[in-house]
Image (cartoon, rainbow, N blue to C red; front, side, top):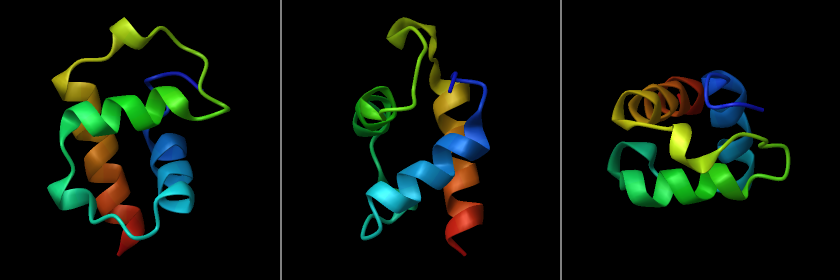
Amino acid sequence: MKWTDTLDIAIELIERHPDVDPQYIRFTDLHRWVTELPTFDDAADKSNEKILEAIQLAWIDEAD
């Protein structure tokens, strides 16, 4: 997965962190969790606030 795979990342984060409310996650934690995903294969420094926000919003949408 790459940073642009926001929905796939969100789905995997839901599975790995089922007790987390994505509305209150810090972007530093989100960034770390994404880069720790076993299927993630992109450079850690290619993310930015816009990408992290898109992942967070996808996570919120999928969790509902």
